[in-house]
Image (cartoon, rainbow, N blue to C red; front, side):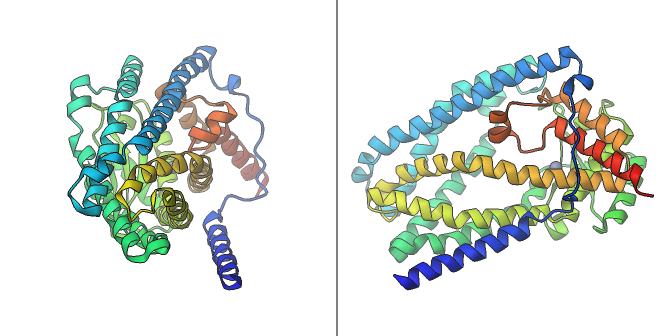
Length: 400
Ligand SMILES: [Zn+2]
């Protein structure tokens, strides 16, 4: 018993130290963010449009989440009876139940997803047709399906082999898969090199300032799917790149604003945020799998296929509870990427212009409610991003 307690204390200490390292940031702790009033930056019409769009999106998020949980709760309650009638062997039956649960969730949330598509089309944010929405995305659906089966084969195989300590053995393969996916994900999207020689020259200068080495800047043609402007830093080592949606290059954003975008993405890579993402995943994988192992004991543990529906329910509920923490971690890294963009471009004016332009182009609320902030915002709010640019301008003006 004492040995167990000291093991647990040692594990908690390792966890805490690792979290401390991952949380470190180059944003000065002395930085004081001034109060920013959104009415000074946005018209009443812009604020109204963003608020009314977001209200429905919020309802759809909660509706989808609750439906998903209700469907999986019903499946956990009654779904296990199919397990006894299957002749596929325990792991095969577990995978079969997993696929059933997956299909159930897909069917249950489909109506609200169609409503969401309608709402986004109505605001010219989505360009996806209803037919291609229903029948066009089989590739990603098949990918999720295969991943679910693989995940179940791993956890059930290990649960049968190691009994109650399977969760310790299951974490490393999932962390390995996450690492692998972080490496290959840039190769899964079709892109082409950035044409603009001016932006390429700006990117080269920013690369030198950040000391990140050469990072290809690629463009993803996405204007026939969405009008939303976006960009991302992806990949690890040789697969690293910055991907900019072509919707950012359609004339709505100035060269100065795009310079801030590239500075932000290179900031993510300079501060190793993709590695840190994997690191945080690893830190959550152990306690998450431990909790799933405890919950599924109610159905004889995950070596029994009858426990699979309950495991799916536990996973979805845990994800929901972890969401505020995940968002806080993401916001922390996004704030650092914004800070890197300010330090390397030394251009708070264009940063503020960029953040302002996000409100009419994305219909994001510049200053959402606390509830929204906690559950749904994985970036600092637009008001916070403007405040950081103002704080940078003040500190730059004060230093010689
Ligand atoms: Zn970012």
